[in-house]
Length: 247
Image 1 (cartoon, rainbow, N blue to C red):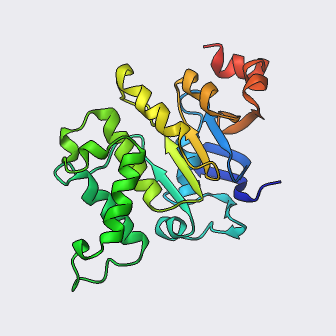
Image 2: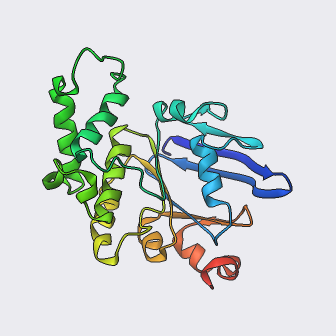
């Protein structure tokens, strides 16, 4: 059985009297393709925020590759192998695509403090950035500023930045959000081409994508897990249909 890379243990989050996540426990192994679904307000993004370190849980714990990272910062979790893309793109609009990926690689290698040496002095990192963009179908746009890219291509750049960190676990928050239907094919191809050993958790409302991509689906409703299983099991689950799919 493959190695456990991510585990949440009874994660709870309260904001005063509002109980957003309730005793959420899930486990991911190397190579998992896990979709997190549920109606609006189910607590999906809050859960991912707790996993990534942007929100502290009220109780419970987060484990990454066998280590308790609950009290670690978002940056520390990134260094430990956790990367995330966000629902809304946060790219630098005027910076060339390749330079943004190079900067991510620069950060990964701990080189940001070497102001005496230009980033152009690291040809191996430039080659790695080009290869990553080529892998995601963005090689022809490497020199473009991101403001010239179509929205779906910007989502691919975000994925490139996350993959540049060489994560063990990748969290994708609604990668298809805002992507026009005609641009979705490239994003789907990029998801299919992700490294097989990478554990991927995806939040997504596009059920066609969910059932195509995921080998396992976790369903949240009112902050609690109501189902966790293979796509065929989830599709036929009466509780899931009542809470979400039936809508």
